[in-house]
Image (cartoon, rainbow over all chains, first blue to last red; front, side, top):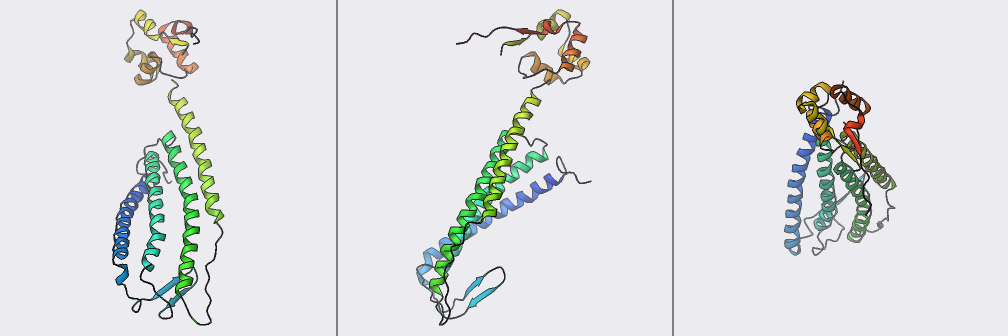
Length: 194
Length: 71
């Protein structure tokens, strides 16, 4: 049978994996910041002729080898990394709290006020990430629609309505945080009963 | 708290040490120490029963109610 909490359990294995993800994420974030800073600083020297534009959706990939106007001032990479960076930061924030929660599960002390707060932070992060994604993908859409100029092809940015499943997940996590808060109070009562 | 734990007094009368009592009652020394210093929120009837049995006393000997002054 699978052991979920305690030492050598699913929780402790996940803690190790999340620790790895945390450090990998930190390195990745630093790399992105570095690359982004480099391209912002050296942006005006970029030449559009050797560039290629690729747009990926879930089912299709559009590749434009010519017919798009590349303006060096607002470098594509800057936009791309602007989209990725906030998500990485919030993702790291979530991983940070998740690994603390899982570590407490591995120590078999899940019902604490700290864990309740951590779950609440994760819930809000999920909601915020949904909004950021909606806004940024719209901005990215505007940028692409301005860049690609092909005869007979019309591209327009789509205001994607907020992803309700993300908000729903966030609200459910917030409710779970309240459940944990209640659990923490019960745990305290239990601990202080002899 | 208006309930005061008089366990230390009863233990001193009976000349019982914390370790011995914890052993006989079947609770940890840490918990018994918390109870003695009045840092607990609740006492189980089973614990109270075991304490009274081992110390040969009444619950009233261990617990005392003192009205708190309302300021």
